[in-house]
Length: 114
Image (cartoon, rainbow, N blue to C red; front, side, top):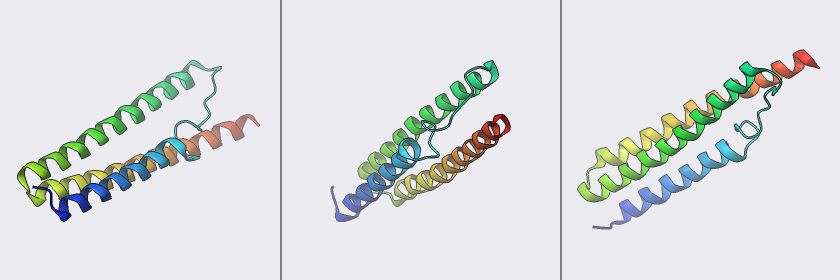
């Protein structure tokens, strides 16, 4: 049964997922804007691994959030709603920390050669 609680939960989770998408794909610290040295094999491997991890983790994040909302809808159990919210918070914090670390590493790497 569709309730206002479910609609509000879906709206909050959608806005949070959209905000996470903007941070991960359109911000300065996103994998799209981090520069790697394409003259070194180690740097290319790091770039490939980093991009693959960030892409697959975002897909898993969206899948888990969708599953949490679906299970919340089917069972009307608050546990699934809370699980979805915890997943969003944990993913957001971990991904932002990883992106900041890689961005900072990139800055230090390129300063070394400037």
